[in-house]
Amino acid sequence: MTVPTGRFISFEGIDGSGKSTQAKRLAAALEADGFEVVLTREPGGSAGAEEIRALVLQGEPDRWSAETEILLFTAARRDHMERTILPALAAGKVVICDRFADSTRMYQGLSRGDLRALVDQLHALMIGREPDLTLLFDMDPDVSHARAVERDSIDSRFENFGASLQKAMRSGFLELAAAAPKRFRIVNAARDIDAIAADTLSVIKAHLG
Ligand code: ADP
Ligand code: TYD
Image (cartoon, rainbow, N blue to C red; front, side, top):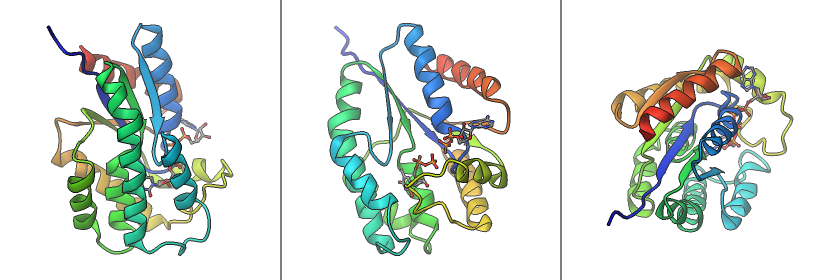
């Protein structure tokens, strides 16, 4: 007898690269094909993690130290794993997660000094799992940032990163992808929504077999 195990897919990329738009499109396309899909996001994705989301994304930029912020994102992720992601995978569902640990590696790992080692240590201790597949939505930060600021959200604590940090994060994501080529697929996100959605679906279908 085979035990059902789902697939854990994350979407990553800088702000405004189209992850949420594409995650919704993909979820709808897979559901139309008969897959059971859980579409979720970070920070958030469970009741407790959504509460932590408000703590980390709202308020003054210096509200938390860099280290406290890493703890908060990891606490949110742990709750999301326990209550949403792992149960869905155990039930054989496809989990599409809009951002996961690679976002912490980039945002908290790079934005206030080099804290990558700390992020990785805490991940190993408290999360200990990577997605089965990660799609990196890659594009020029100048264009994606213009898209993101137009949205006018209250979750704006991270929206004033300068252009050089956005560029560093883009390169950092590409380096993560190069270091883990089995897990990552890079999607050119600087195209129209339909073209990206078609590409995304074919990459995922190839992965799901
Ligand atoms: P993310 O989740 O990566 O921050 P979103 O999916 O929220 O990105 O998209 C950011 C903004 O850009 C939204 O207003 C969305 O409608 C728009 N958008 C998304 N994809 C594209 C695209 N391929 N071309 C132009 N605009 C887009
Ligand atoms: P999100 O709602 O995905 O924003 P966007 O749609 O602009 O991509 O994520 C909110 C912000 O949280 C985003 O600026 C990135 C940040 N973030 C971190 O700093 N660390 C993390 O671990 C995660 C998951 C997100």
